Each structure stands twice: as C-alpha cells, then as structure tokens.
Image (tube, rainbow, N blue to C red; front, side):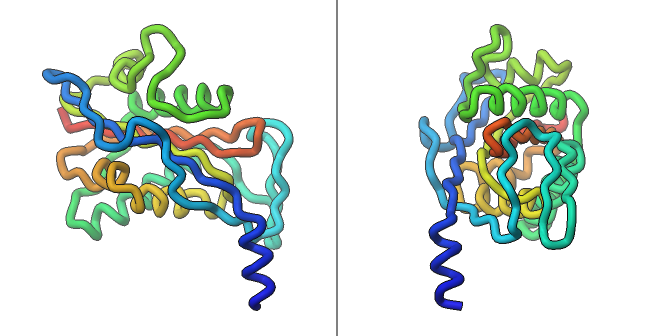
Amino acid sequence: MKYRYLALSLLTLALTLACSTRSAAAQNPRLLGTAKPKVLGSVVSTEGLRVPATGHQVVWRSRTGPEDTDPEALARRILAQVNVVRRRAGARPLRADAALTRAATRYAQELASRREIEHVSRTPGRRTFRQRIAAAGGRARIAGENLARMTASPSSLPERAVRAWMRSPGHRANMLDRSYARTGIGVWLGRDGVWYVVQEFATAD
C-alpha cells in the first residue's frame, strides 16, 4: 500500500483554477479572487486511463469499460454536484438556463482551443463573461463565472471539479451564493487531453 501511494503521487498532474469573478449590471465588475490563476491542488488518475491525443471523441477506458465523454451529460452531472453542496449550505439549487449554458459551452471550447484558462476572451464582443452571456441571448442583474482546467476520468470529473472549487474561497463563494438562481455549465475535452469547465451564474432577473 505504501508503494502504491508513492506511485500515485508520482503520477499527479496539476490542476489549475482561474479566479472567480462577479459583477452587477449597475456597477463595475468586482473581483472575488486573485487576478491570476492559482494552482490549488492536483488530480490523480487511478483507473488506468489513457490520455487522448485528439479531441473529446476519444473513448476513455477504465477497468469497468468505456466511459461516457458526452459534454452535455458531464455538465448535468457537475450541476447535480453543485446543487448537492448548495443544499448542504442551506442554499436553493440552481436551475439550468439555456442562454447561460450556450455561453459557458462556447467559452469552454475557446479555452480548450487556447489550452489555457482566463476570464478574458479573445473574441470581440465576448471579452467578459457578461458580454458572453448577452451574446448568447441571456441577461442577469448579477452574474459570476468559475473556470477549471484539469485532467480526470469522465466518471470522476464532476466530483473533482466541484471539490476543487470548494477549496478555493472565491469559487466557493460563487457556488454557494444565495442570490444566484440560474446557471449554465460548459465542458470540453481539449486536444491536450485536459478538461475545460466553465460555469456561469446569474440571479433570477
């Protein structure tokens, strides 16, 4: 067992999370975290998975067989995990919003193509998360955004993403904020074999 833990530690890959942000339509955007991404921990793949060389169409295999890499299914599972921790904190569950989901998915795809995470997009008219939400047909009096970039098996991704966010004060504040009622989650597997996760938050109005 001692040698097994040593071997796993050597296989650890870095998990990087971007800062959390929040803004109100009537105010300038406010930062709820550091201005630069922080390395908050690591993720160990323990299921004998291979890192794909191309996009998310690859079949992941574990000891129990192929794993589902469908981005929409993974986004739903992440939302379920987020709502579990919200209920524990006494907050109402978030409901999925189509416009926020479109904004999150598009940005997850952009980040995957760039192989990095930051809250500022390179796409004109969609540089901030508020602009991305508006471009997708959404609106929000108050909005926020969480980002994650990690290596993980599809089966462990939802739990590990939420657990990592919970360890970061800024990300945790966004997830448990009782003023938020709607959310959209985008998940994309880059050609580097790394998952990119975007979660947008918004108030009911």
